Length: 359
Image (tube, rainbow, N blue to C red; front, side):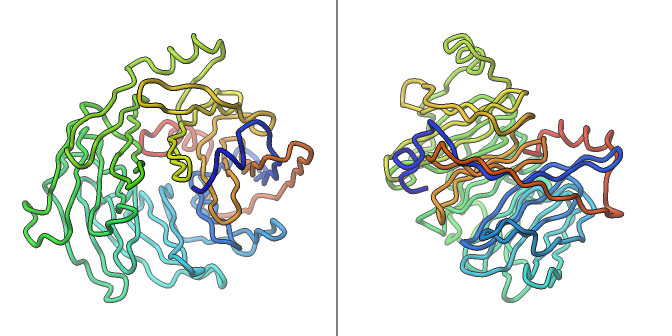
């Protein structure tokens, strides 16, 4: 994320909202987002992925094939090829131009997270971390003893691509050196966060630090060089911030790191769709802005688009918001939902909302 603070300043927004209308008893909201300079992929709770043309916000294709919740999506860099992982135990590779699935990678457990390093795909498969070569279409490595419960995130280091970090419901954060052939030697650090971890991300001038956000919404930072904790921001951070700033914070979403200003930004929200933006300092968390008047329900995602220098949000109100620093224009588009045999009933959707692994 380049110059997020200076460009957005989190004071005002220019938003375009994509609304997926409800049909009958079914609702659909966006679980995950990925972008290229020209495309946006929005994975819905109805197991479909919509591909939008970013020049005019129209739907180019609807990708259908998953049979359970889609947990993460990733574009292969500099291509229109999209990867998606799902609780249906598959990773699918899509040609977004044709809308066709070119390959399905079957695994033995639910896949909650994926990341890419060239041709190497990292997957969190149940309690395992699995590495797969997209060119040879073969599994090349499996870490099946580093975690004892579901792996919720796998992330390659932004600079040293031989380093990989995973986190899990078991509370452990594992860092791997993939240059080491022996699996035991490859595990550089095992950090016990003592809480089920839902989200992680790198930050720092050399991305030498890691933030963790637990399923109980506890924020902590870690030094990846030593494996030691830098700061735990308290078990009641939401309550502390709500009391300090006199507004309700019902949940945290995730953090985004601005490498230009070397600042870590925390996003939260309330049940009415207002987003709250905080600066994470070494000592405390400080409110800097709000995201208002777009969403009306829980915000699921915040995503910094480096190609267009804008913030993208998605919510359980079925809207995708695009935020810039121009307060004078708000454009709202409504797009009809697709009828599909993959649609879920409302009670199943509600169960997905409360799943600790879904955003």
